[in-house]
Length: 293
Image 1 (cartoon, rainbow, N blue to C red):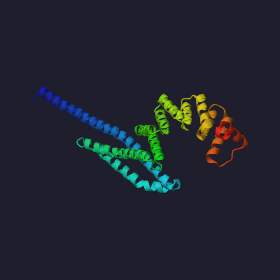
Image 2: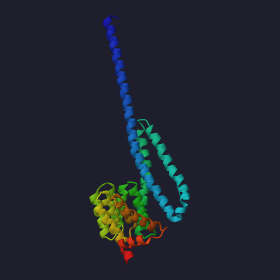
Image 3: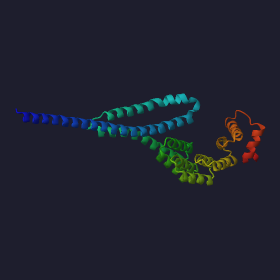
Image 4: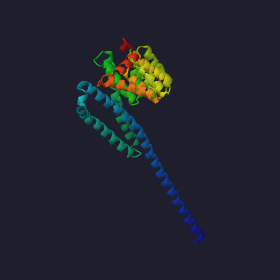
């Protein structure tokens, strides 16, 4: 073999090695990208699963507490644990299979994982519809359970289910539905819409609406208007939560004596472990219409 043929052969070998390295790198990059995509999908599904599990078992706990009392909370948790951990185990096993699945089986394993998540959400949707029917049929505690479930959905940021419940309450003439809608929009920083719903609740005679208006303006750093609404809540509805928040506002604005006094009054009225002093009683009577009457 002459020199030029050797050089040509070496060049071909080197070119093949380079191409092999390029293809190997591309394959590794593709596999890494697939794993990253699966991780992203898993992260999203995991958030959804945890959200729905929190709603499902928080409400189950609330239901059991209503029946057997808060003093039996340990027994309640022990009773719910097997079911909770069984569902968690099924989800974690589905996650492992999906993350380690081949390209051929990826879609099938993803569908199964999504089904596990949807099963929990469907349980919650069925609970929501059951509670609506309980309310319509005037079942005992139907309204209370519906409110509790809506609040849990709101707290867990499932705004779609929370909105469905609050709109149902509004349609049924329950003014707390306006407050729920207001809190929902406040949570997503739609403050104008939140204010409109709280005002609707207030005009409909809801006793907690003034307190929520105070909280809204407190969050918006409009302390003067917040003070007015908290004062209204105390004066019109004997709202002790509003009294405590009013104390916080005074403390934040340098009125330490007034703030501390209002917080002490709120604490004593809430826990009823101490009697109000004469001075505190006078302050409370000046603020509260029902006390003056």
